[in-house]
Amino acid sequence: MSDRLDITYILTCQAGETAEEKTLGIALEQTVELPQSCLDADLQTRITGRVDELVALADGRYPARISYPLAAIGGELTQCLNLLFGNISLKRGIRIVDISWPEPLLAALGGPAYGIAGLRQLTGQANGPLLCSALKPVGLSAAQLAERCYQFALGGVHIIKDDHGVADQPDAPFAERLALCQAAVERAADETGQRSLYFPNVTASYRELPRRLQAAKDAGCRGVLISPWITGLDALRFARDEFGLALMAHPALTGACFGPDHGLAEELLLGDLFRLAGADASIYPNAGGRFGFSVETCEAINHRLRRPLGAVKPSMPTPGGGMDVARAPEWVRRYGSDIIVLIGGSLYAQGDLAGASKALREALTAA
Image (cartoon, rainbow, N blue to C red; front, side, top):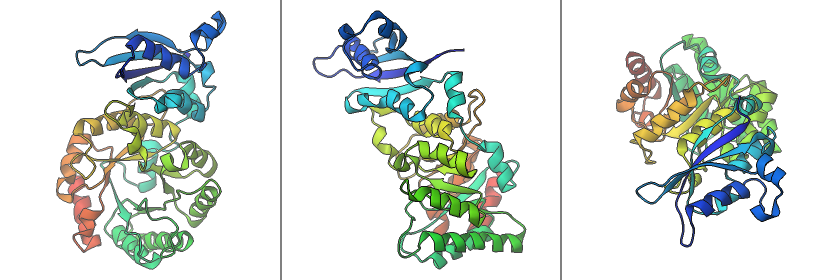
């Protein structure tokens, strides 16, 4: 069992830098934050990051692998993030492309409470893709959003979430919207016998977040939407451990980390990190939508969310961001059935939300 965290970087050297100096600088910066000459032999071997590999690519970049002792992390997600990309985020030409997670750290972080199997149990959908849509736009009243929620539920949408921009605005205050939308899915279930889940957006400040989580639980919601890069990633673990709700993570703000030669690879942040912090489902912008992710990136995210990872449960990939109804079955065939298909605008454009949702659910089942 490894007691070290292995991180692979792609380094792009700036003017005056050598790859050897840059790599050693990362190992020191992310642990002891002192020049090597200031360290005794014990600290250099026991705590400082260790450069395990450095090679050159033909295009002038350098893959580098550095391993860090778990003693430099201590089992905390916050310190894990700091070690991953704390001070070096302020530098340039450093992109993290792979992380090898040791078992002790996986156990400390925990991962999803529900995962794919748990979401299937909550929705009553034992197999096949799940269908999700979003209540929007900002500016509608709580009653108007609840009516849309009701129509989606009549059409058999498995998970109906608030749009990530629908928070606690005057037009649709959180408490009023929560009550009306949860009542809407319950009314639809009484009429159709189909169970739809309403996931309110609980993204908020550290003072308000627990109140919204508790309110969602008290209202009978089985899960919530949260933007963990806004609240802080450890808010996922807090919500998981204290409230027992399924967690759908939204990628808002994460795009600032995705540079061609600096930052974190998309599949590490939206895959590994969201999953390990407790996301049961991770939303990402699908290829062909309005955000520009490639198919290869999307498939890498899917892989990271679902791959075997010690005792950590797999999370449900949730491609969205402008998915078209007509192409949805194609994405299911490509990505596999363990996904949540998130479609909003393409359903709204058809006018009849219940009818459009029913037709899409049937098309996905046949995919």
